[in-house]
Length: 76
Image (cartoon, rainbow, N blue to C red; front, side, top):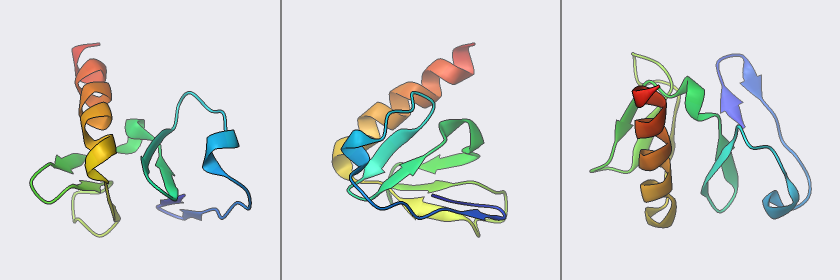
């Protein structure tokens, strides 16, 4: 996990990590979609700040799920 003043490494498999507030975005990374500021679907990157300093890549497989989750949050 990466974030402003936060970087946590965990040993084990992400498949065994059960937290409904986090989404898997690639093989070795989970994010908190509540902290997403911008989603660049063309380049498959997600940004967590306005300056585009804190970012991560999203796999093609998980992009659709992330978009759906972010759209649901906007509707609330």
